[in-house]
Length: 532
Image (tube, rainbow, N blue to C red; front, side):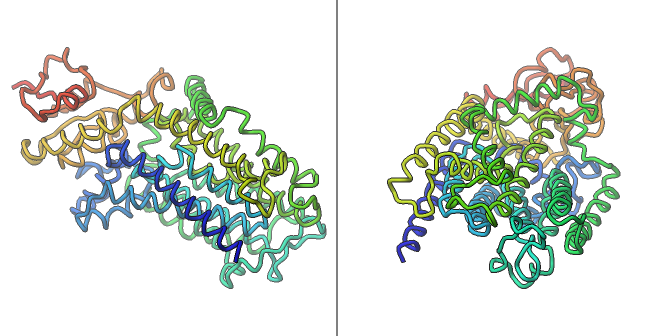
């Protein structure tokens, strides 16, 4: 009863921390989803109206990389609900569900109770994980599906008798009592990884790493390359993912989404990689700097070397169990981080890294247990003081000084959202249906105006998205391709941009209209009109 009471108290405290953090970012974002989320909503909007999954009716451009999330918003659009705020709520629920999975994972692998709780509290305090959980984007769904797939993958490392089939006793561990009858025979992880890959393309990359890790483990621990369950996992993935991929290829006639062409050079120019490294460095620095990598290193080294751990100083089954999931987690994190560097990072602080944080914080908690043994299996409140200090430090670093300080406060995301929504609604009320506009931010203004739009940065435009730019990697990701002559030749009636770029363009003038009576919003966006 005492443990049950403590678990309830911890869960209430954990949920309260997460929800308070969510509300903090909900208000900081101006109580609406970020602009990029509305690109997906725009596709859903057109799908509901019968135009197909397109940005502009009649133009089949794949300007999104989150198919499953986009299609999940179609019913919201069809029901006429406030899709921006509804997506924020759904994202927060997926974020909370991922935190619950972290606790579940720690229990499944037999880790001391405190390891799961510390990882969960760190996740709830992490600015990147929480901000992008409430952003209205696909990040929390992707994080949930990815971690659920990983959790099931670890569960599936049992024979029908509940043991890893290995000649080496060190690689034997028992988790069968956590498996459902279905998952004992059917590798459900393949299904969840397929859904993750339909949510973000990186899910395919993670599944490939999972298959490679499984094969390496079989060879090292069991002296065979695969089992029929491993084949079934790949089959379960392929039977879901392959039809989806073929359908999107047939529909959009493109091997890769247009977003990839608009943001990345496949050759990986030096400037792109340098920007990606700077992005990684910034992210690490707002997460207590590079010293935060020490506990994961210790966790993996302790597991694979057979050194006594904080779990009672035992080796035997604990070593095999821990070496499986710790090597798997590190095998995911390192290549995934390298991929983020290769594509040049992101305009955000930690959007791309957020799905990795459940894996990372479990390694952090396990490594700290190995180093300091501050998380004993029967932790008292007094023994949680160092953990509470760490959680508080992570909040200040990653949230207040990180995502909020760098992204929200410096950019004034709330005002940006308010300005774009106001502009979109003004255009809907004052511009005739079918009026062509051009925008630099392709989310809220096109969505709320319901007008065809030229995406001036090419995410949703084939011509601009496929431009060859020699300086790619030197600017802001996703904002480097631009063709002003092409935009002018398209003759949009209105152009909505941040700044005053078109002041020197003879074909356009500042629109002599009052689209808002708020001076702050007027300073943020400029509305141009084509000269008659």
